[in-house]
Image 1: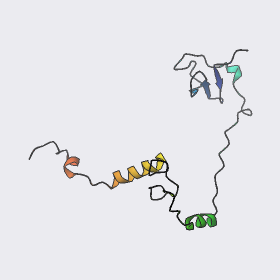
Image 2: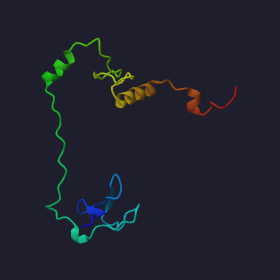
Image 3: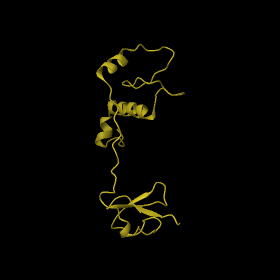
Image 4: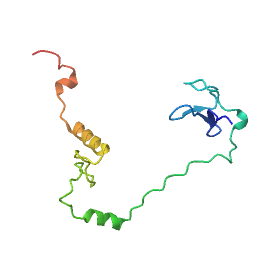
Length: 129
């Protein structure tokens, strides 16, 4: 049996599985944009009842009591914590942040709080006095 190079996701979208990640294409597109593979036959279109919608990921629910307890836990002096003001996680090795996300948040905050040079904003920074 030969493996299909493309398959239907739903009635409007098909994917070419030759690529990583698979390339999603609309039903109206007959060939893959990258490799010119043909779309699957229309007879293989899934029925509406067969199409499975992805189930939403369960959300982590934190009770208010647990949140208060977490905020009251004393800080362990042997652990170096993340430098981002709203984060309480331990930092990574050779870093002052727990993740790249906290590092980026801090960089954005520093960028927004910077004072701007008025000459630079008016376009006069290249002129000589």
